[in-house]
Length: 132
Image (tube, one colour):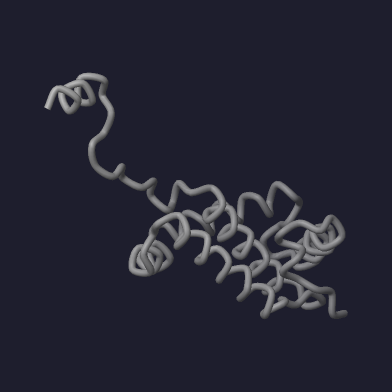
């Protein structure tokens, strides 16, 4: 009993600690932003297409990482299907593309950004290929 009192007095938690919300897990968040950026590039630039198998594998690797971190499939699904969070991540993806020079309504700028990402070997570039 004395040991229990000592643990409480020192402020150590007795039970399992709460998990960080998935929206705050950098690897997951950055992965979804990269997927969003690649998707926007391929939709705007007709000479760049997606590497669908790579994108699927990457998405599954993010899911596997989250599961290893202790998140359930239900928690992952709830996060991925959260509309406000999805809109927030797409906003981040749009802003990052704009910082790199992509201009809405100007497909050529998306092509330049996409080709640069491919050449640099970034995660975004890894999900894309030049087709034309």
